[in-house]
Image (cartoon, rainbow, N blue to C red; front, side, top):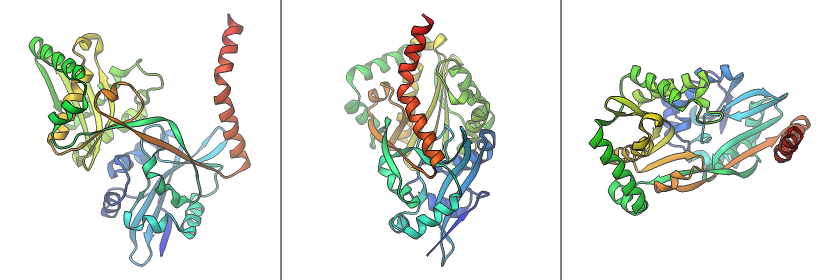
Length: 360
């Protein structure tokens, strides 16, 4: 019934993918804009190759599934991975819901997909919303396990004031309100959603500068990843799937937030704030409050703070979403490499303590 193909030059802007994506459980991280920029701006620079597997209904040639993957060499083993490379919070294949049950229960389909992935040592998908795990069954039998981190999402409903009053603590509401009143009293406070491409591009650069030195391994400090985010922000704004916000005090930038959107959900990705000059006004909290309100008033019902267990997220009425990882080792070399990595991870604390004692 199905034709499985590798189409590494796939056009994610085509109507066929737009329809398949819309009728699947894929997330904004598999949107046409995100994947177009991922494969155009990021893959080559990260020494990876695209591996895009399509599933078409044979009789009609209708696209009913797409698996965005990459292939790369890492520490001597060949990895096939979901399209991630450190920028993707949720990895879900785009499989049309009407075909999901048949595709994920077909040994013929899974065998064809395994052939399409080619020779490799290890297959892995690092961050799957646990309620979307079934989509990866299209690859066949995979080992899955919960990760040691969660995602966090707030169900806003239709009335932001009602959500705010029932899901936030009184102290949290009062704290933000006091900061907003003081900022409005002492400065010309403004928050806006940027629209001009040059403004958006510059804002992402400014966001990266504001974050510099604040987070270990911050991906946006990588020029290639920063350029990728800029491309997603600019093209996503034009397509209605990305938003870049700027907070100013007396015309000076106090904070920038970047997120992507799909259907009724806002996916918060990055924030950068000038805490040295404006920290007393709590610019990050002011931005979260304002953006959540604006999103809800435009009809959005979910605000997703994505992966990471930072305590502040619970203050905004979020609930944890379990995240899982799936994997399958195909060769002895892959098995030994993964076992060695796991052993190093388990023993790293002891090794670090020994090195500290040795150098004392």
